[in-house]
Structures are given as structure tokens and as C-alpha cells.
Length: 71
Image 1 (spheres, rainbow, N blue to C red):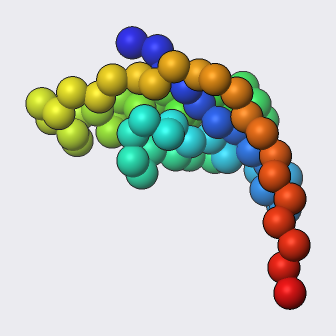
Image 2 (image 1 turned 90 degrees about the horizontal axis):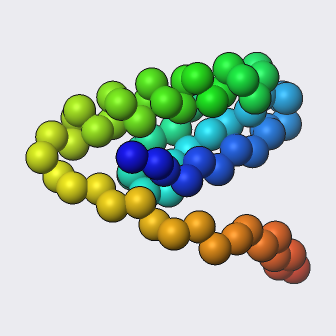
């Protein structure tokens, strides 16, 4: 199975990866390579924990950055 993975970089320079299709499935790493290895492990763990629940990957459409003014 293939899953969409979103990777962001936090304020301390760590890469943070999450899988939108699987609630609570995320990890972090110091490099892109490390975070990709870790997210594969995290996906396996999350799927095992979900048991028989069927998780269907969503079709990737795109990412858009939106700015919102705060008061």
C-alpha cells in the first residue's frame, strides 16, 4: 500500500512527517532520509494497532499555503 506523507520542518530544524489517512501516525527525524525511514515504521505500527480497520489511502491533490490575519 502507498500512503501520502506530509513532511514539514519545525522551528528547531527537525523534519516532522505525518500520514493524513492514519490518525495519530507521525514521527520526526534530523534528515529527510531519517524521517522517511521512521514514517515507514510508524505506518506499520499504526496499521498493526488499528487491527482489522481498513484504511484506504486518499488521492493526493496538492498542498496550498493559506495566510490568515490574526488580531
